Image (cartoon, rainbow, N blue to C red):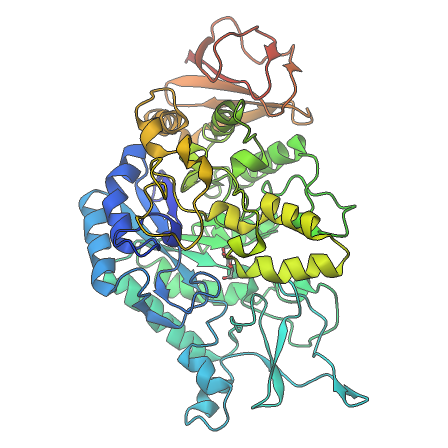
Length: 558
Ligand code: BGC
């Protein structure tokens, strides 16, 4: 099979609001991205995925789209977007945008018409969304159509007095779900997608792509995710978009679908698939959930890191896609805590070494890397003390939920500091000036104060920094063609070691990491005498003893 351009791409994910503020209003913007394209290029990345840039009331930072054809005034205007495309293309960088298909903002004109019977276009647009009458009326009290739970906490239903009915929202109540059974809505969406393709975008990351179909029988079930996730019919919608829009235009398309089975993953993104060309699933992203915690439950319940689970998940997906599709590699995105705080250590003593260990552990594996902004300098979770320091809509619904379940304020705050999505959304730390070089004006969310010693400028000048480690690893990926490496994992059940072999174009590499904060003794290193040490994140080494987070890469010619 001839290789496609997206197979050996290196993607850098930009969370627009927090990346770089060019006009000093405290909010990142498109011109800010243009300013930093040379930096992105210096990392070795050649594709940028930007979070939603559309006009939006920003209930969910742009995933609530008010106008798909307009750029948010926070970020600039259409000319700025075109300038970004031109500038990126001039520098050999592709731009992929976030495509939000599952819902719109409740301020989108479609919804404005849908919710109001007196609106002249009500008839056409009402059915663009999903409406249900109250289930029954008990003692004069209406009950919700189902007891399903929204991803952000609380019910998925919001009452609309004008129609005496409820609309479905699987995310926030300002994000009503679209009805993909409505053919006119699909036509409108396709015209919108075509419009961005004509403008010159190189691809899409397709948001919440496995939620497009719902179970229209609306049975009760709590939390009920199976009734609005991965239902068979959503593939029909994606296939339609793939066949008519994505594939004929040679675009990079990445679907977001948590919990896909191997069979389904290949249906989405196998080489023969007509839906996407790559997939984001989250198998390795929450390997430390304490199921016994019922006070801050689910992803909020921080437990012990299950290292075998992380390795097994990565190995599983490499195996699923081997020769059948293109794997993706990422530690996290804007919906997760910072990986160095989550799976490494953010204490002064072990921060740098653990960030490098995480990089070695992932980036010699096959697939297309997606590096999330700030990961390359080891940005950490936020240190917010007050609830109102947080910005994410999810934080507020979940905080209320924790308190209701019996959490104290401090327990709830700790769960937020450990797990909230805002951890990954604090402003990019470019230097150690007042707002970390992100802006000269107070940022929309506070800069992490460790910008004084974790920032790009300081790491630029240190050849052994985390930043330069990322650069070296990406360069190595390219020179050795590691996107297509054949890999073998060892010690998959070992609770500390992260140990694998990857065959590059010229060398065979063996990575051995101590994925823990305890010393690790590993007697069975999978290296022979002809291997030499290529890279390590510590100086002194004893062959079989690995200090906390110590990691080494050995190699031999073949
Ligand atoms: C995005 C989230 C967003 C949600 C709703 C997710 O997949 O990554 O940031 O809140 O979809 O659009």
